[in-house]
Image (cartoon, helix red, strand yellow):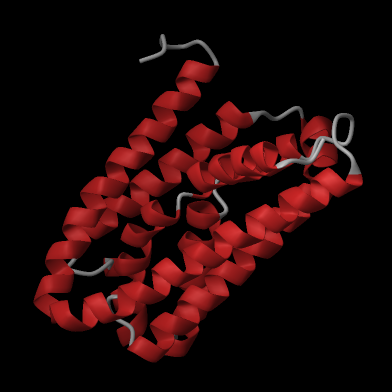
Length: 216
């Protein structure tokens, strides 16, 4: 049954798994070497790609995951490991993610091409459309338990969370403009540490789910 309590519950669930605030470290890391215009483009494109990915999971995710026999712990552990590796490039890079900065200075990739690449990975996935978010939208739109109207409400709630995420990412631009290169380098490393902690927690939660370690 659709009511305010149900909508609020799903909003909180989607907010937690999409984690708009937690996406900021990744966004700052990958856009530190880009112009404000391209950074804005990255924010819009990454949010749109994440929306498409999650919408596909709402429509077809249950069928695919059931066929493959995959569950949330596997997605959590894999996604956490990917985010941890990216966090290392933020911490130990040359003040900006080393791989992205090298691509900018290479002849193979212009800043515009780089912006399109980082908008998909690591921003759209696995940061915004995280493994937990993918599994959450599948569970919240279980065809065996929820009506079409309920599933449409879930999709609308997800859209609202993603719009808030976009607003937060767009607000990061003025912050970087004030910080300039030196400040951005410091923030990138600090955010890298935060992201590494989030990634480790994601992996540990996956191990808890499969019973390898006790809840903490």
